[in-house]
Image (cartoon, helix red, strand yellow):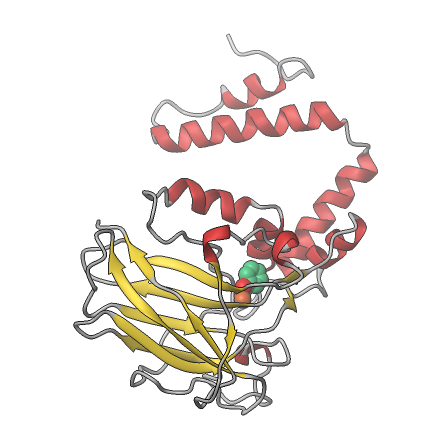
Length: 279
Ligand code: BEZ
Ligand code: FE
């Protein structure tokens, strides 16, 4: 006999409504969701006004989403959930390059460029040579690895945030390693920037006295056949936001050296090897 809803039995009553044919994984997820959500409500005992404010926050978060703005992913990022899901799904052996948050600014189809090309098309910022190798866990070079890179410009914006102001594909490119596994390209030394904070997520950060800044970083997506893809960044050592990244993306192993060059055609040089785990 089914039970009527009560404060004490709330989660059990809701969970008991699921049908017998419900997919087992969906059943597990829904059961946990309802149980944790009801436990949360019992813990904080929101007033009706507070619950309406929560619904309003989620409504505004959804309403701001578009082809070019994903406020729900941003919410997941600032709550540390994106990094947690990533950590659970990409447990790697010691020595393998760690993942970090993908972020909303990757664009598929960036031009494939010759090694050494300059990805900075707006001529702003301090020039930097990025170089290193793609290796397997035994230190052997990985040939044919596709290294997809993107970064903000010297003003702290990605090209897609400033259409008509920045050239398309500014600070983006795709490179393919040869037999030696090496990659190298020119760009600008990345600068720290705030995540988009003009929406509900930004308001929430402000209310809880958190800043929206990310430490300077270059994004890398490295694919190679037979290996797990790596979605990561290299972070600029010494950046003031390394220990308070708004989206919790920093890992010690991803902090890269950025050295001033003597001569050469760039002002800075950053060396970083990517170590891939076999599938
Ligand atoms: C990014 O690094 O591009 C990024 C990551 C998470 C949220 C916003 C931006
Ligand atoms: Fe970024």
